[in-house]
Image (cartoon, rainbow, N blue to C red):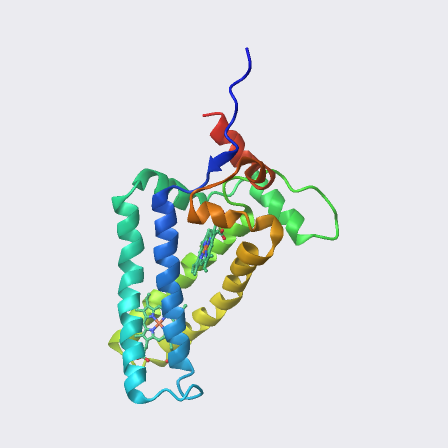
Length: 210
Ligand code: HEM
Ligand code: HEM
């Protein structure tokens, strides 16, 4: 008898994780945009009224960032979303080996099979988490004390530190051909099984052995 034929696609992210990513990403981008405009208000010739409107929009977006993604997670497929969230802090031998090879590119060695996220993605997610904590704590402080210098410096430093991380994220998603197929997984849920096997072999094997 023939073995059952495997689907050519594999589900990468459930709806809840996708909505979580997009509500978080869009409110974060809105905050970055309104925040950047506030910082550069003089260069852009933004008057006091427009600056007040931007600050108000920034505050509304902060409330959206601190509520919408979490409500999405809590009201959807919470178990699968939490498994995806927990993935970012799970580092094992394969992740450490991946990092060692990436850190020494002059010694050519094959990358080990990776889990659902590779070690670089996990570090990116942990960096976003740490920056979000700093931005939220300093932002809430600025809200109550608009002239607080240390809070403003921390807020701006975290914003500037996030820019290169976002640049790399966009490069991987839109420009670098080997990782571009990931976008479909975050938009529609599934990716080609062949691509997933090349980039996240350990994850595909654990899905197939369920
Ligand atoms: C999520 C919680 C956040 C809160 C509560 C918050 C709050 C604030 C407040 C109260 C201000 C001062 C606005 C004013 O000038 O009246 C501010 C400014 C700013 N925020 Fe946020 N923010 C948050 C997140 C973010 C994020 C995620 C970014 C960017 C990635 C960001 C970037 C900025 C920038 C660049 C400024 C302008 C600082 C300046 O005046 O030069 N904020 N924020
Ligand atoms: C135009 C904007 C964005 C696009 C197109 C985008 C796209 C994606 C895609 C396709 C993935 C899945 C990668 C995979 O399957 O391997 C992903 C993951 C992720 N995204 Fe985004 N994203 C955007 C903005 C953001 C923003 C603003 C943040 C946070 C501030 C963010 C945080 C993350 C994190 C933490 C992950 C998981 C770890 C990683 O893949 O690096 N994304 N994103």
